[in-house]
Length: 122
Image (cartoon, rainbow, N blue to C red; front, top):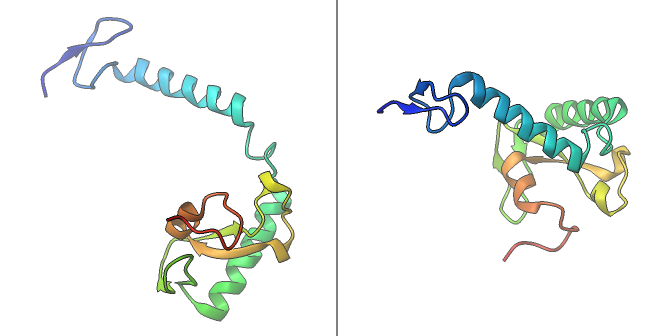
C-alpha cells in the first residue's frame, strides 16, 4: 500500500488516513463520544450484579445443554459464542433478574436486537 500523509500531522503512513498515534487518538475520541451518548455499560444497567447473574445463567446452560444455541428465528444449532439475552430488553423496562435472561448465540442475539419476543425480522 502506498504511503499517505496523516490528516493531523502530515507524517507519511501506510494507514488509510492517520498515523498510528493520531489514529489511536481519533478512535478514543469516537469511543468517548459514543459513551457520552449511550452512557457506560454500568449506566445502562450492565453492572456487577448483572455480570454475576449472566455468568450463573451461562454456566447453568452449558452444564445442561452444552454449547448449543436454542435459536431465535432459526433451528437450534451448535455455537461456541453463547451470550445472555434479555427477554424484555432493559430499554423496554426489562430487568436483570434471572427470569428475564436467556441464552442465545451472538448471531441470534444480534438478529433479535431489541425487538420484543415473538416479533422476528422479515
